[in-house]
Image 1 (cartoon, rainbow, N blue to C red):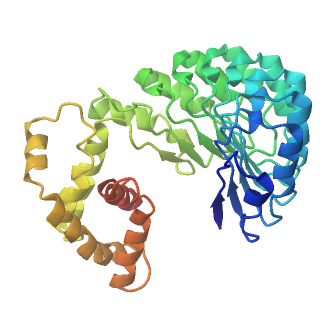
Image 2 (tube, helix red, strand yellow; image 1 turned 180 degrees about the vertical axis):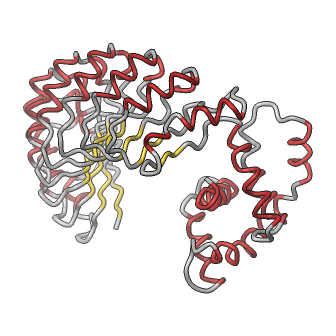
Image 3 (cartoon, rainbow, N blue to C red; image 1 turned 135 degrees about the horizontal axis):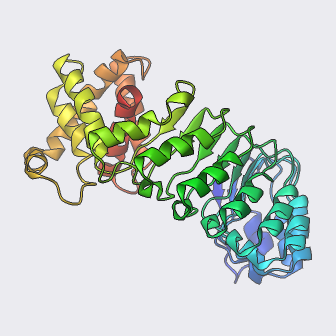
Length: 381
């Protein structure tokens, strides 16, 4: 059960805290400017958190503006039931490294998932960052340090920082850190520093597409051999690359296959090229109807800045309402045949709808597109 608490400062904290359901497991108290509260008020808030809470989100509260001792006291008050802690976007760079080490040491040993993204950590020196990382509980297995502009450090400094990642960490997120600013040789030095315990690496949105074809071999060789998955999405890898260049890039990871799963979606216009032949094959085998194929392909076209004449004709010929209806009506049958869903055709369709409904509040068409993409990725990518 998820509960989002937005404080009304004109009302009693005690009264508002009493509204938290006793059985809540996910508590979100982000965006509450907790930095403006006095120590007694903060103590009251954290003492009122139900023992059932396992996921605690205290992001976007500018906690870095609080005195270090107070912040350490807050963290030490976090319940031992909490396994997922989100402290992102709290301007933690405002604290000295010794204070941050004290703060992170106060995190309960129950925490296995720690999100410290978007905290401006590039403002700290490599030595200071190492001190902070060494203070993280050795129970943490999932660590998110994305969005900290770490690419502003030198390669040697960043390598030193990554070597300080706790040996217990198996899932590491270093996405959106401007790593593309480093040369291929420098980036390879950084990647070699990733602990061998890491099995899942998120390095998306780092503008790696600016690297040359032959440089990717150097980068892939630098990755830990223990990796089971690497997320390379949204790096512009295939932008302005022809089929030969694209294949050369992907084949650079040959020594890591088949044990390594790469997520390479949203990397440029080649997304369409990658799915076109598999979709045509599936259509020819009558596994999916032609209109469904057109619908799925249509979602790979809007990302192109300047569609060519053929692509524009495809877009113009699509009757989105009809095709979306066809997708929902026929999707279950061919998805079931591919063992993606279990149960009857009706149950398969309902599962597809449920997957899309998770994002309905944003845009129904986008949700259908997301479902289409995931469906396609299951047996084409």
